[in-house]
Length: 425
Ligand code: AMP
Ligand code: GLY
View 1 (cartoon, rainbow, N blue to C red):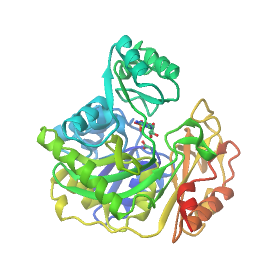
View 2: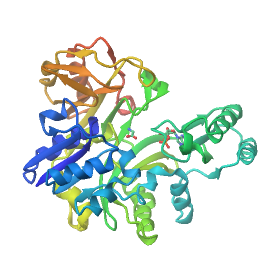
View 3: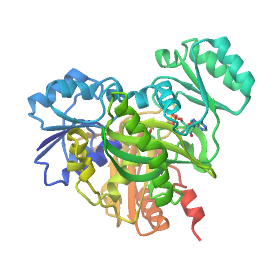
View 4: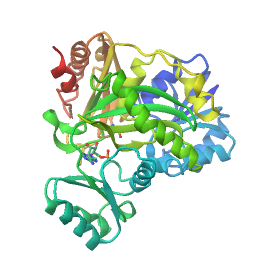
């Protein structure tokens, strides 16, 4: 099969790495890809959000199967574009991608189907939103309804912060159309984990869980980012908790989507908050997490291609995937300044030596090749990933590789997986 992966980040590098190992894959393309992806796939410069461009590319390359990595093209309807062209695709339709693209769509679905999540209300009117915040008090969470590149959520510690956030969003100053409606919800305490499951619209194949680190700096300090590191498995998400989250949250969602005529086909990424009463849904995403995908792909022992295809074709019921019991962990090397302004184009040296550390795999998230030189080309630049029998050893291996990389313009967190390490006897 000739396979095309859409995207150019660390998630897509990990997907390409796993897909290129499949005996079913005869030729792998990635658009636009990056310097690391180019080691396992032929990269072609077509943008992630260019739906007609990607469809035309797949037609020209006679692609049999497309895997869409990022959320923005899915929410914009890229899967429908491929389907209309008669090309098999992994990723939900535009309507089903509302699970990520519209916070109120998901909250309303949860309300209709009794899926546990934070109490909420949706507003387009500033005065009503303000009155609600004043009545509820703080802490309280204000979210732009639409997709806002991971930045549309304000966890307000005070009523004043929450008021400022709704005024900002509803006035259209921030997030544009994505902030034309807001969801205001109860602040949930607990520990956050991500659970992944494939679905063919009817059946669910649970994958495994992972834990992300959203803040930029050690100790969960600093601004929110797309994710500075992840690891899997997560001790809190043991077999019993996973079973419960599937039964109470994921399965009812897949059933509800089917019953409402918008079957979800693809990977459902459930962001969960777990406290003493069990799991509640924070949010859904309609694609693999980045960097969670990187640790999932490292632990996956089975061929991923037939499972991804079954999401499109049905028949996921008969699937079983095997996972390593070891811990996979990834550390994000980002350009200094990220998630705010940063410079592109600095050179990264000594990657080859770092990649030779035992158990280590380096995925590229934002790089460019300039001849033999590798240049930083984004905020999140490298995902230094490692596997080992224990979380401590996986972490040691990853940081050993990080320390071999010569890139003064980069930074990383030094405490990835701190919760799992703290839990160890
Ligand atoms: P989201 O974009 O919905 O994932 O939200 C970004 C982050 O905000 C989440 O990963 C949580 O850490 C936090 N968050 C979102 N909703 C809530 C909530 N209701 N209670 C507490 N934290 C939340
Ligand atoms: N790592 C968070 C996300 O992919 O949304």
